Length: 340
Image 1 (cartoon, rainbow, N blue to C red):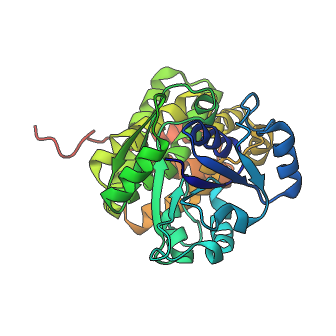
Image 2 (cartoon, rainbow, N blue to C red):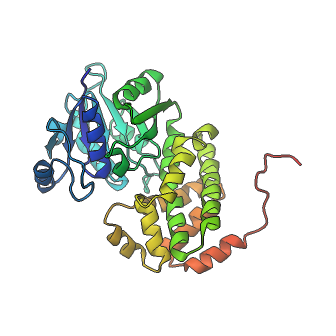
Image 3 (cartoon, one colour):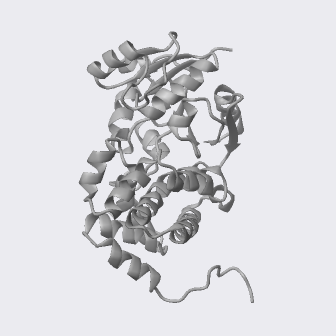
């Protein structure tokens, strides 16, 4: 059965999801805030700059009018930079219908933490549109590969199983496998914090530290994410799953990862701004790093990698000094839950 879907955001992931959902037989409209961007999208029928080579089906429409993209849609899929989430959702709010009129579901695909409030993105949406039906879609899923129809596995988190199953059925096909989970908070914490760890992994690559150091960063990185996530109420199983270790591995290892690429440039000696300018895409880890550190302080969780990334990004700490400090930290037991 065809579903009416509005996609809010026309970057690489928004276009990849438009490709996926139109292939699944749904009616899709893609929104961009910029009228000039919409004209380019219509001319190329995709985003030639952000996701070259992915041409969308003729049935996909493009608009800069929020009401056209949102009103009456069965699904509204949000795929925008986290820094613009609150502003954009505020503009959406007048066109989201009450649930007793139309079962309209908002699918959050944005990964990040709002720096001013320390809210995950779904909580920002609910803050602006109280009572709306919100779920989250996350996992190891580079747009460049989804746009080519390469095998991808992802997870949908929702407050109730009925909503999760509904969204699962809309997104899933032979190359895009969807699992479901009730742990929305854990999924979003894993999604946001893996970008910070990926910056560190990229810095290690740029500085030439080798595979041993990369493996250590990934392993200790998921330990940090899990400690904070569980302190906030997330579940251990989530951090060992697709939106935890799965997303972390792909983001730390792939050159599709804008966070890793920015980290590489910083490790090679470029400033944070120079690295972001060269990547020419939103580097979410930069925006989540401060928030992650504030959450670590709030919940009294030790996160040395996150702390070090903040020092490099915002305090001009040299990567060489940061590496030395991490390696010479106090001696530790790897896992305090194991008995001798």
